[in-house]
Length: 198
Image (cartoon, rainbow, N blue to C red; front, side, top):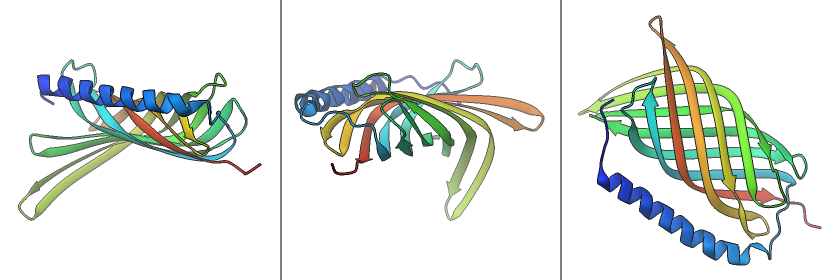
């Protein structure tokens, strides 16, 4: 993958962070009305930007990042679920998608909205190219690891919004060699909490 250096990328990331800051300022003003309640099922979606690279190559690419999670909060400190995060970009007419999916453990270290998560599962790479009506694609998979952190601002009893960072790593064996791929995504998380009414 060729080196991707662009001031518009930095400007775009700065704009996203500024927007997130404004949302969090508004959210934190209401956060105390709805205290954190870690119980029952939850579902979350995330969107943002990320940076990915192959092996120890210093040339990295900036693209779109996203995540999905669903699980169950066992108590105020621990939860279990399914975590999936991905990175995607078109590079020289080829669209690359990296994805890690698998079971995850969620840890809530305080009564605040801090969430730490991690898991082991399957990492996959998908590449596709389209020319006219012809599309050629290839996929491969291997061991995948995921880790992340976020902060939930509970702006409603059953809905929270906040910043998140996700890390994905995978090892793909192909043609007798092993490629290691990693990406880091930064973005905004939207989470729904299915809490039983008191």
